[in-house]
Image 1 (tube, rainbow, N blue to C red):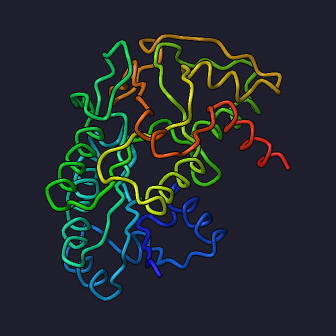
Image 2 (cartoon, rainbow, N blue to C red; image 1 turned 120 degrees about the horizontal axis):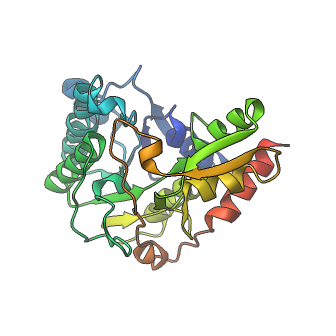
Length: 281
């Protein structure tokens, strides 16, 4: 029987993954920062040697992208780089497979086409730099690993763009959303299923990219989220909505490698519709 461990088990993705494992009657250990601080190297090694998991789903991450530019810069590096290195090094010692979640922010967003898994990385914000360094730490420590880059994550648990738009629509007649940043939304349920698929289908180790199919701007995403409401969504440029951290303007990741594993990827429109139906029940 394969033994699984999930870091960041109470986060947006970790909670979704835990629910999937429960639904599949798969036993696992789930830890969040309160009971497994991944920046504590001795604790990480102690816990992993004690439990001896076969597979580690490494969902723990610092994800406050804007704060990572200044007030959270040190925490961003400690968690996303040093913490990931601790988990990867410990995984090597116990011969465990590691599944590490990365981001489209490893790219600069200037590519007119799609970014392949082997496209040159060039992160322009501190979060992207740390996640790329985390990828490097995983590659240096392990042969048995999956790096899964994702983007624009939304789901039932935690804060995300869908919840933000719906909340604002309750109190505003008109919303403005940037129309010059294009990418792929990702439902946590799709991502969690793919992570488990990599293990169960015994896919080739390496780097993958997973988001829901089709592309959109944040404005188009918001319009679809709120189409059943009376709120009006207006497009604006990134210059009209400044943020501390640089956002890639065109971060469309190629999904062919993920699809070649036999995994069926719903469109973001299909995923969003299912998610909103669940929310409104």
